[in-house]
Length: 234
Image (cartoon, rainbow, N blue to C red; front, top):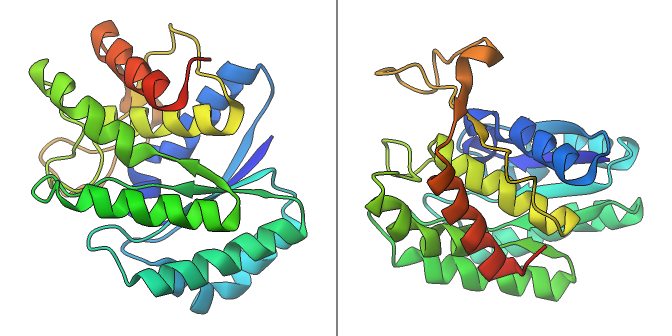
């Protein structure tokens, strides 16, 4: 399996595509390759204007099975721009048999009221284009309170990006969306590439072993429970 990720920091935070790759391999027993085109703060409009030739080449010649499409989230961009530019990416994917996956983001911690609008936008986009939707924001908002009761935060300290736990949830929703399965129950590792007390952009940890984190079983069980509630049991 080959998966292309297009997005911004909500895609590259904590090396989430690599975590997804490992979950995909665990859930299917098949090898997986991931590639990422993700740039800080960028929208799909930017991708299809400034980086169009990279996107075009990667999609048309990369031989990808899936393309995960993540739009700018904080703040949300203009909906017509999302529709047009996601549509252009989806059209390229369909030319070569790549299955698009819409990455539904989560609202800022301080603006939970934005989640409903995100849900509407991405559900309508996925339905209108007849493509897969990864309902990450819906699982995130549903699981957040119970995880908080355990002292576990899905958010990074800026209240916008994902923590290591948040990206574990993201990767697992993507895995379930793509494969129809969850990774095994003993898959409890995630990544945290942030150096404590530093700005997360520069520097970050450069050794994979240093960023590997083992999650408590009760945290994993809660995340699996809400994914199964939203996406059905595997």
